[in-house]
Length: 321
Image (cartoon, rainbow, N blue to C red):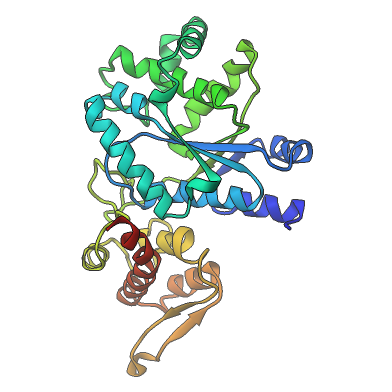
C-alpha cells in the first residue's frame, strides 16, 4: 500500500506539470480511487510517444486510480483521419496495442467515442458549450493537435468542445495527455463548471523527440512503433541524432529517461575491454552526467538503448503477432 507522498511521487514522475498539484492532493484525500483517462485519436501506429501516456496511466493505476481509455473514433473522423470504417479498424488495433502494453481489459475501461458521442445528451451539451466558446478560442485550442489548421474545417472546431465534454460525460476526475493537449484541457477547466460539471485535474506529459530530433509523430515518420521489429529499431537508432555530450536535445537519452530507466534498476553500457569495459549506472541522472562528461560514446549509448528497448517490446510484439 503506497503512502500519500509515494502516490504523488509516482504520479509526478516524468511529467511536465499537474494542473493543479494542490487539487490533485485534495482529490486523493476525498477519494482514494479517483477516475483518470486518456483519449487516443486512432490515426496510425502506436509509437513511443503514445506509450509515454500509457506509462502514466499505469502509474496512476498503481496509485489507486480507476482507468478509462477513450478510443476517439469520432474525433479522428472530425480531424480528417479517414472514413468511419478506416478509423474504427485502427481503433480496434490500437486497443490491442494498449492491452499488450499492460492496460488489461479486466482493470481498464475501454470506450469508443461512437458508443456515446452521437447520443442526445452528448450533442445537447456540445450545443450548449458551443454558445460560450469563441471561434478564436476553439481554433487556438486545436493549434497543436489539428490537421491543416491554417484552413480548418468546422468539424475541427467542434473537436475541442467534444474533448472537453468527454471528460465530463465519462465522469473522470483526471485528464491525462501530452502538452499538445494543454489548451484543450484548459478550455475544459474553464467551461465545464458553467454546465454544472466538475473541473478536472490535468496531467501533461512531455512530447518526445523523434530520432531526427523533431517532435515524434506518425506524420513525421520519425518514430519507433511498438510493433517495429528488432532489426527496425536497430536501424532507426543507428541513424538517430545523438551528438557527443549533448544532453538537451537528445532523443536517445529521452528513451532512457522515459522508457528504459523507469523499468530497470541499473543500466549497463557494454564496451570492449580495450575501451574500458562495461560501465553500470544506477539512475538516469548518473547516465546523463556520464554522457555529458563524454564518458559514454554515442554508438555505445545507441547500442544499449536498442538492447533495452527490444527487451521491453519483445512481449508486446508477441501479443500482437
